[in-house]
Every structure is written in C-alpha cells, then in structure tokens.
Length: 308
Image: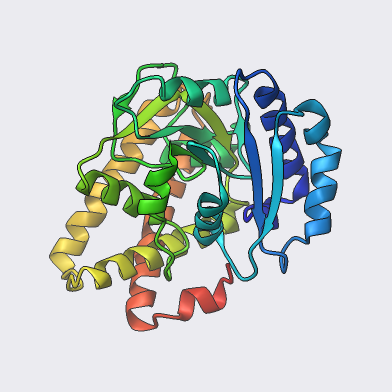
C-alpha cells in the first residue's frame, strides 16, 4: 500500500476490487496480503478500503491479511509480504496500478511452464489522454502496451507486476537501501547470477499512472539521478569525465527521442505535441544528470528536499 500515500485510497480500492473479481474465478485458493506502514495509512483505513471494495464478499476464496510494518517503505513492505505469504507462488503488485481483466489468470498461466521461476508483466502508462501522459508513456522507463503474448527471457523487472516461486523472493529479497527505486533490478540480477532465467510475459498487463504532474516528473528525474549516483558509488566507479558524461547524455537523449519519434503515432500524439514531448524528454534527462551531480556533491540533499 506504499503508493497509496501519493495516489490516495480511491486507487487502492479500485485495485483491490479488481483483484477480488479476478481471484473469484480462478480454480485455486488465493491469499491477499495488504502490507502497509501504519504511520502513513492506518489499519482502520485499510480495513475500510477492503470493505468498500467488497473484497471478502466478492472473493470468499481470498484469505485476507492486513499486515502493518511500522517504518517500512516500498521494497521493505514487499519483503515483509514475501516472508508472511504462505502460497507457493507470490505476486507483488501495487495500489496504484490498473490491472487488465485477465491479469491474474495470465500470472497463473505463466507458471504452467516449468522453466518459469520469476516472471514480470507488461506495465505501461495509463491513462494516456493528456500531453503529459503521452510524454511519460513515450520517454519514461515503462514500454508502451504490447499486443504480444509470447513470454521471453528479459532483464527487466517491474516490481508492480512481478511473480515468483516463494523461495525465490525469500532467497533474493529486494535490497533496502538509500534509493527510491531500482532494487527490483538488483533482485532480477541476483536471480540471474544464481543461474535462473527471469521472464517477461506481455500477457500480464497493467497500467501505471504518471507520477504526478510536470513537477512530479521533475522530482522523479532528480531521484533517478540520486539513485544512479549511489549505484555507481557502491560499484566504486569514478565520476565520469566530461567526454564520457557527454557521450552518455547523447546516447540517453538519442534513445529517448527515438522512442518519442517512433511511438508518437501509437499514443495518438498530435503533431503539434511532439516537439513539446521531445523537449520534455530532453529536460527529464538533464534533470537526471542534475540529480546525479547534486548527490555527488551533497549525498543527502535529494532525500532532504524531496521527502519520500
């Protein structure tokens, strides 16, 4: 329930109701753990949201548990859920995503293949109706919605749509450190380093809202630079010189602008919007670099200014 702090309980209620409807028609018994920090969202509010979503009424098969973990944030909440879960397969999702009607069925079907130990879905930006939403869909880190249904090995892990055998989450918990996001990629890297394959199944689809308005996107860019800086510190990588930094920026901009150019038609961007979206992509990449430099000079500045 960590993301409900920013998007509100209405989104959480919608997500819980959708999960209940889908779980009710699955030919197996399901368990629902709602994990939260009571300092942010009270247990009473969580229970009221479950009642308003009619989770227990719609899906009597759901064993519902509300788990309060004081002081925990995004990845720590997920780790606590993994430890408390009793099922053979665990799915991690978030309060702010919008799952498609066959989301849970696609997760179950993915594990019909014995080689699948870890699978992640196709998370895309939804809704995609305003200029900002189309911009985020085109240059942020989630791909566009895919019509493909073929699972493939992948190095990408989406923490809002990742499922695995329980022992995988227990053996490879999400790292909890100074970063806002990114630990899900470490989880995937640890799994692959142990000799397992991580899969992406585009049939497991869910929409993710844009992270706030234009200022919210700027905040996420600065946090991304902060996280990238700490990742390089932990790898003992020196700060890039001006030539290497310029080359890295050029490659990032080329990738972002390429996605804008090739995906504009798919998100129905109007021709007059494309230059604005391209400018936003450039601005985002520049702010990522700014967050990186600020963190190099003042490691606690971003978390102090922009509270998680």
